[in-house]
Image 1 (cartoon, rainbow, N blue to C red):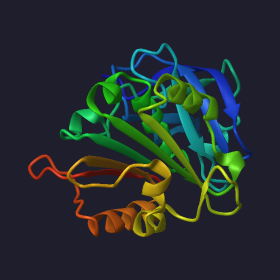
Image 2 (spheres, rainbow, N blue to C red):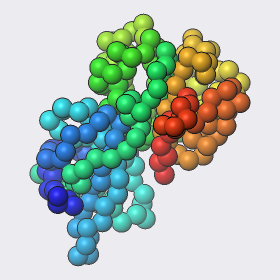
Image 3 (cartoon, one colour):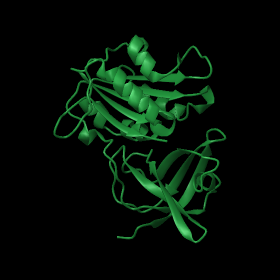
Image 4 (cartoon, helix red, strand yellow):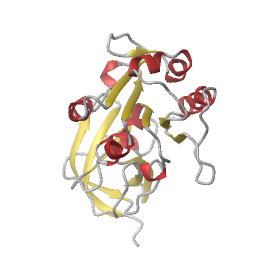
Length: 247
């Protein structure tokens, strides 16, 4: 199998100066919602690649990736400069275990993210899986400022399709808004504000929590959940927390 296939950029979406999405046509293997693959570009005679989660759902004709730019990084600023019609390398074999197939039976599903960690959860939410398996689904997305709350129309469509079963809870850490919780996710777990906003108890006997985002959030949220009786999920030792870190 080839290490890379050529993809063609269909569209670039600029959410903010540092947050972008690329929509790409590329022939890769079938993937599961929540997985990632690598994007790469030819830079100084070699292909530089990095893993990015797939935002699109399995079966969609275009692959979508949501990412932030690292100004001093070799790849992300170049990805953010691509235009429709440009060629980008795509690794043909997706990977990753932040998928519903790995989640044990539960009643409630909490999808807790920071920044671009939202991406794999959107892929999951656009599939039938969550709505076939769980009575309630809560999506949590923490960012710094309101303009970083990307994919609002996508989330609104999900909420419109499942108004009684789906809750969306945004967090803002650097400005205030009446529709968002303030501060960090781990503190809101500890003091009960997250449950109050969701109208749903974080109960380890009923819920599974998937965490995706910066390592500090994942570590601190895991500790806050552990204090509530949650533990990390392993195939041989089923638990209630699945996680993937982004940085």
